[in-house]
Amino acid sequence: MPRRGYSKPGSWGSFWAMLTLVGLVTRAAQRADVGGEAAGTSINHSQVVLQRLQELLRQGNASDVVLRVQAAGTDEVRVFHAHRLLLGLHSELFRELLSNQSEAVLQEPRDCAAVFDKFIRYLYCGELTVLLTQAIPLHRLATKYGVASLQRGVADYMRAHLAGGAGPAVGWYHYAVGTGDEALRESCLQFLAWNLSAVAASAEWGAVSPELLWQLLQRSDLVLQDELELFHALEAWLGRARPPPAVAERALRAIRYPMIPPAQLFQLQARSAALARHGPAVADLLLQAYQFHAASPLHYAKFFDVNGSAFLPRNYLAPAWGAPWVINNPARDDRSTSFQTQLGPSGHDAGRRVTWNVLFSPRWLPVSLRPVYADAAGTALPAARPEDGRPRLVVTPASSGGDAAGVSFQKTVLVGARQQGRLLVRHAYSFHQSSEEAGDFLAHADLQRRNSEYLVENALHLHLIVKPVYHTLIRTPK
Image (tube, rainbow, N blue to C red; front, side, top):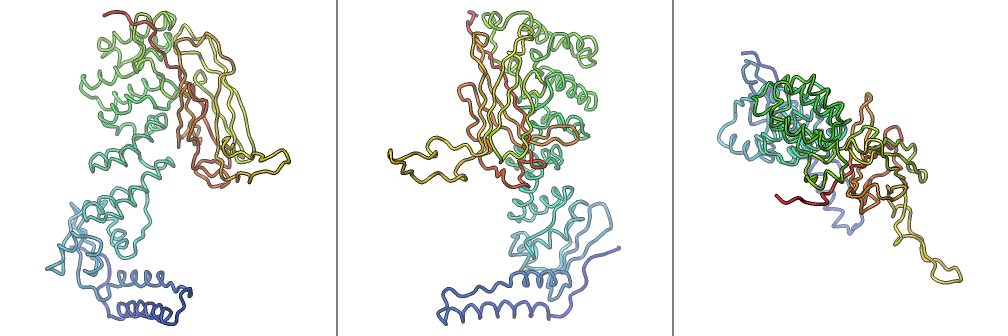
């Protein structure tokens, strides 16, 4: 059986050298205390100790256990000469496994066996370098052997790389579900919701499970061009996955057909393979959509309940629902802009617009922190420091009138970057009509730092969205 791995145990020299170095550091600290040097200079040789530990692992000096790691389904075995004490310090499983034996054969999946050297190195040095493809196998090893600190570290790495758009969100979501990692599952789900356009156009879309698809279709915070894009993405998924009819019909009923203009609905009914196959299952929803577009929202709301999710827009990027805003050098000074949105998704409101004014300030202090004068002589209280402020964003309608009767507006601000022509969302902030300002907008952002996660080439990329929310005015008796 072919084997490859680390060398056999050597002399005790490196091991005793490390212990001697630790002893010297300890005695130096004790002498400083005896001499009364309470504020003496710290001696820190921790990096040297870590280097010694790496050498101990690499050379196998003074090892007392041998781990033979076999990749499942192969004859490949990697041999590691290790130290019972160091393995047991991190892992209760290793402590029990090696308590009465000096050699153990470990069967691991191929991807886990391929990174076992990194896993063992972490147990010796407390650090490792992770690649995207290595995140799941390293997390599996940390979970299997009960190394909680590495579990947390890899999970944090995965969440951070989701925010940067580099991680395979679909695969990581399914892994998180399988392992019960709720925090990672939520992070993956949030990333997928905010970047559904990019994911639906990637190879990952074909790996989406029916359960994950259903989770996404129910969300109102999906970010995509419009509802028609979501329908086409669902149709592509149905063509790849070929799910049972019940699964397909349930998914098709989650599309918000009132958000699709009538002309596009006609085209779907004429050309869509999914509707040709499952049309009867959504016939009532299509009729509802046509009725909604045919009447004014105020009239429709007198007879039908418009409070359901079917009448609530998602986060659409189309011009009818908002506008992008790129702010160069956002830490420099205040900025303002304006944009228009359609009054509502109904065909009755297709030609009616609302104008919105937006004010951005990088250091806009609240009233309680603004400088005030103590007396008429001009003696001022200490001025608030610039760092006490934070970025602020206010969105207000240019005018108020009767056009918006029965409608309130939810405002959403997306913060992200454009990669290969697509908007990659990193953060989202929502606030309703009763508030003109996003209360926690960029609360922890440092716009002065050029490598801030909120900036792309020293510019802040925003997309402003306004979603009309209808209210039933008169409920008909049932």
